[in-house]
Image (cartoon, rainbow, N blue to C red; front, top):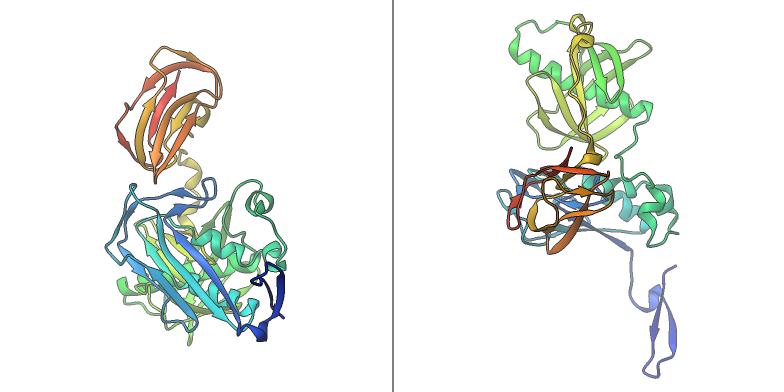
Length: 349
């Protein structure tokens, strides 16, 4: 039962029951922002929305937004895209509708916070209803890492990517009964599989089990409802590269599934990995913005934690500090410069 505390004209608190104030059901609001939730839970993102589809056709869902497909999210204004509100008969119903709405929300062209919002809606502490304003650092002490895949999730993702791959190959080949021997690469795993067509769609044979994916969806759909042996999933094929890496949004998070012909996998060990940048010795722009000030110069010796420059973005000023002690090798920017996210601003020797 819902109760609400209000104050009378004399200042005394009054306890009202749900039926007394006409409250019926539960509503949850998700604020959709053009932000990168993997950077400090929400560094702003900018860009043009080359794909935008709100889930406003779902019953009990309301979208309050001021943008449309083709709109541009700039560094000069607030990064909010939409207030997504769902209504249900109780809290659990409102949560389920929120999850459904977020899965059906297609936004491409900017990084957004749907992965984090979607994950929170399934997180045990949030579901318990008992949490504090310190929720994010308590639940995600290492920062948000995206949806954590279970074995069933991995099987779903790989099977759906394989189905997308088979659909594309069928357009390029007249051999309808062909079987594809592939190795799927997902996160740090390499999983051999065979995919072929069956009466209802596709059959994916793993080393230890068989999975079936029902047809009836298209790789051109902005949002796909796909039925596997684990149930029906709502996914989005964000893009596919020329070397068969399928980027699929699944349970809010975008995952890369690479599908490589099995006879080629053995050559992967000869491919050199790109050297990783030592982030302690550089200042990298965490977001697009304008450089307000630069406090170091080439040849200057500085200590760890010293401020090197200040970046202004989305009406906020951000102090950028170095992570090591050393001598300034290069300063790539000056006050007034406009920079992009991940651009190197200052380097140590």
